[in-house]
Image 1 (cartoon, rainbow, N blue to C red):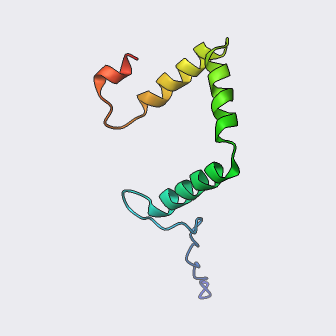
Image 2: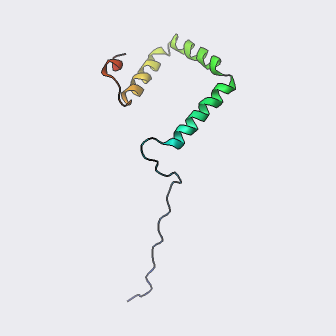
Image 3: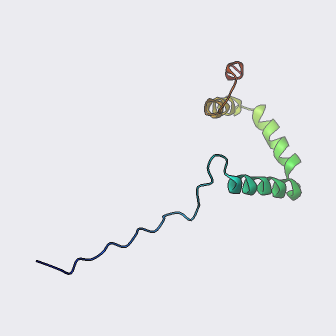
Length: 84
């Protein structure tokens, strides 16, 4: 009988991210900071114009489809908003 039994080492967590429960404050903080950086970049008008051109182009149907897909995942959505 082999008395040299190797002990298993505890597995390391594969992610350094800790569970913050409902509402991830770290992710919210990163998102908000990214939004601030975008506004400070001065590219808001440029991107708004690009979005307006896309809506007025052949790309419109694809954008509308993508919006419906996104809305289908939204929590707490009012039924009337789905028909949009």
